[in-house]
Length: 306
Image (spheres, one colour):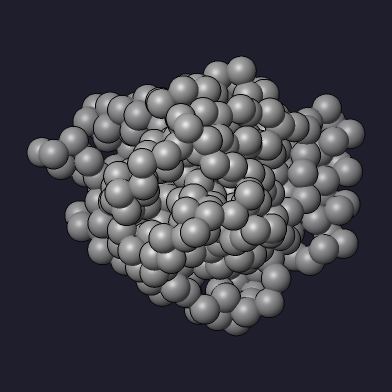
């Protein structure tokens, strides 16, 4: 059984805490991350088609987003079709609002949206756990885009457990027109560690700092600010030194904490409440930055229309 079309919305994410272990023999790193889904979304429409096609637009620059089988959403649709034995195709229409290559998991959100939309479109009715397993085959951030809310990620970041987060956390984001390559930032991090420019916080990475969990459970942004951390930040700043000026401006403008989001170059500023976030947004915009006010946690990929 099929439906004429399905609309799904999936959120971008912030890494409230992100610790990265040493490079392993398999080319990956163990991580310990506290993810929070925030109110900056990707919208995807899926319609039955004979082949797999995609169209992409948005409020962000999408010129570098592949509109073919390299696109993660198309790969997600093809993976689901292969898994359930679906012989047709799908047309995906994506409207992007999450910065491209901005460290907020926009491509992963697209893939999560495609899995949810195609599952509904084709009537496969897979469980959330089954969709999560498929998502993990596509990328470490896809399972969290399906889950949403606040979660702890370990392993490669795709071994997720929900984290209780009380209340609302307000953030201001400063986006950049030019993205950063996640593999390039990881490579720079390994280089900085190898030459002794930065050191490991711990010899083994297994879990997030307990203070992060306590602050999230308490819904206390001031307490969370004491533990906000991103091991990737030093590498992102080494590649884009100008991001340091943005972080320092946010601190001067009243942010409780300032951090590069994921592999960057998006910078995220934690505010004490909604009003403080609006004041911070105005200050950053007045300095010439593209500043957005978002909040979290929000739901993961969900159907808006079917």
